[in-house]
Structure formats: C-alpha cells, structure tokens
Length: 534
Image (cartoon, rainbow, N blue to C red; front, side, top):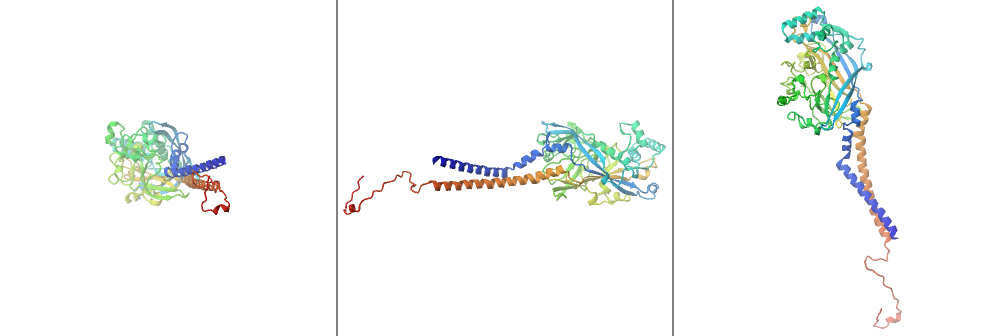
C-alpha cells in the first residue's frame, strides 16, 4: 500500500513541477522577448547567414526607365526665333542586376569591405519601342560641354577649340538612336580629346548613361556590420545615431568623405571638415538600419556625386499588405546654401547653379552637368519656362521610397527619380553653342523603381513580422494555460487521493490507540458502587 501511495505522490509532484516550469517559461518569453534576439541574429550580416546571401546576390531586379527629351524645333531655336521645344519620349526600360563582390570581414573593426557591380540588361516588355531603332534629335553634349567648360580659360584656348570643332564639322544637335545616346557613339571631338588628353577624357566613345554607370562600377565600399566597434574620426560632426547605425558607410574608396567637394582626409584637416563633405554615416541603398525611425535618411551612389536626402512623410501599406514607412525627396534637396545649409559644399568654382539644380561637374570631367528633379520639379518657374514642353507634377515626378519599418529593406512601389541636364555657361567664339548660353538644357530623366517584391523577400518579411511573432504569442498562451492546468490537476489529484486513503476509524490525533469495549451484564448495575478494574 505504501509503495502505491509513493508512486502516486511522485507522479502528482512531477505533474505540478512540469506545470510550474511551463508557467515560468511563459512569463520569461513574455518579459524577455527571445524572438527579438533570434530575429537580430537572423538579420545579421555574417558569412553564410541568410541575409548575407540575399545581400551578396540580391533577388531584386529594379526597373531602370529612361525618359529622353527629343528636340522638335532645332532650326527655329538656332535662328533665335523660338524657345527650345522638347518632347518626352519613353520609357526605354532596362533591368539592373546588382552583385556585391569580394566581401571581406574585419571582425576587430566591425566592418565589411566589398565591391558593388551593376549589370544593365534591356527589358522589352516595359519599353515603348526598340532603342536601337528609335532615332532622336538631341543636343551635342561633347561640343556644348567642352565649350562651356573652356569659358573660364583664356580666349585663345576657347577660340582654338571653337575653330577645331568647326573644322571637324561638329553640329549643335545630333541625330542618333536611343541606344547610341545612352551607351555610346563615335564623336570626333571625343576621339581627339581622348588621343591628346587621355588623363582628362579617358573614354573613346560617348554615351550619357554609360558615363554615369562607369562611376558606379569601380568602387570599394566599407560598411558597418558591428557599429559598436567602430571609432569615427568625425564624432564632432556625426550624431551617435549616425555612428552606431547598422550598415552605414564607413569609407568609400578608402576615404570617409568626397574629395570632389573639397574633403581632405588628413588628420590636420579634421577640424575644418564640413559634414556635407562626408560620405560616412549615409547608406548605399541596399540596407538601412532596423528598426527604422521616422527621420530623414541619406543614400549615396557615386553616379549622383553626392548623398541624396529622403525625408519621412507618412506611414502606409504596399499593395501586398506590408506596412511601410514612406519617404520622398526633400523639396529643398537642390536648394541654395542660403535655404539649405547642408548644400554649402556643393557649389563648384565658387558658383551655385540656382534653386532646384545641383552641379555634378567635379565628378564628370568638369563638364557642366547638373541634376534636378524631373521636369524641374521644385525649381523656380523661370527655369521650367526656359524651354517648352515641361510639366512638373508632384505625384508623377517626385521620388518615393517605401521601407519596411522593422527590417529596413526597400519595398515595392519605391521609385527614385532624377533628371540630368546640361548647364551652359556664356560660351564665346562659337556660333554653334551661342544660342544655348545661360540655358539649362534637359537631357533625360531616370526612374529607378522596384515594381514587384521578390518571393524570397516577401517570405522573409512574412516570416519575421507575422509567422514568428504569432507563433511566439501562441507559445506564450499555450505554455501558460497548460502549465496552470497541470498545477490545478496536481492539486485536485492530491485532494482526491488524500480522501480515499484515510480510514474512517482514524482520528486526527497523533497518538490514538483503540480501547477495547467490555460488555457488562445488567445485573452489575443494580449496586450503587460499581468498580471497574483493569
């Protein structure tokens, strides 16, 4: 009997102990949130991790769309009879395939070094026509650009180039295919310049986007994968949030700043360095800090020559139902230094191109190329009206970036839009360039958009934001309910077995011993004195 009671009590005690453990686990999961730790490990960039694989060979294939401004009244414009008339043609669509190559980790410094490479492939499905067959009439960029560049040189140099261009038969406009315009065509001036000044003009053919892309495919980038280990030389300029952000740029081609805008990397120049000269603390556009905050973010691509600021403006949801933080290009992105102090570094040769325009000449052979928003959005009306055919619209021409607030990755419906222009100075001694003097000539505008989210990224977002959190909540409730049920069951079983094993004849007294009952005949009760002896 004792062995049976011992076995029962042991099982009840085990049941109660399991219940207590389950309740404790439920409370620990609730208060300490181990899922957050698991997700942080899952989203870390380390050799062989899931996120590293997605980053090294991204499943994204963003659409690269070109909208080109075709000139329709070249003769009337050159004769001074009319303003320049332009018509937008496009889109001519390509796909950008990014690979991040030669990644190496420095565990002690908490950084990763790599080389991004972009390959562009034509996509006929989202293009209006074949770029190899469509012909356009566009300004002669080599002629206009070099002649404008030489404006600040002495008159002999300007006159010599003017005479050379006339002798070689260079015209104000060229009639070429869209493919040639983007990826390269033979130009006599470019060929001569490349032959005699190869250190300046280091290309034999000229294509507007081929030149832009060349700046994106020859870089070594260092980013922060463990920001706590990084010590910045510019802690006086960068906030703690910028210095401790995951995946921020630490160095670009061995420097924390942009020498094109006067950055000097020497220790002696640290005190005089301006924040707008730095590339440290901004992002390369593949990942952003997670979780994200409702503050401005800065991204950098070498083709843009400077960081681009995107300002937060609202929460939203994508078509797939994912929550997003939405950003757009700041309206004062290309404002004058007086209006936007962060632009004080981005004037070239002591001149600023005006509100809504940004020169990138230091990155492109000092040719006066400028950036703006498409159709001169957020530029003064006089710039928009300087040519015919532009209609800036906020909803069509402004950039928008939709970011996942928890993971810090771009979502679908994101689109970065930028326009490339040629800012002509007051050229001299050349009748082919004189009609363009003082004009910002729109060349083309580019839209880099994420039209659909890759299935792997969609699954990762669903796993991290839906499946795992719901699974953790279910586990918390399940452990808590089952644990309480086990404890309650153990208590009930204890009461049940206690009642069934105690005999009715037993008293609660600890030293009870039964007394024998003696039956006495009735005759003994007749006497008054009755004595009972043992």
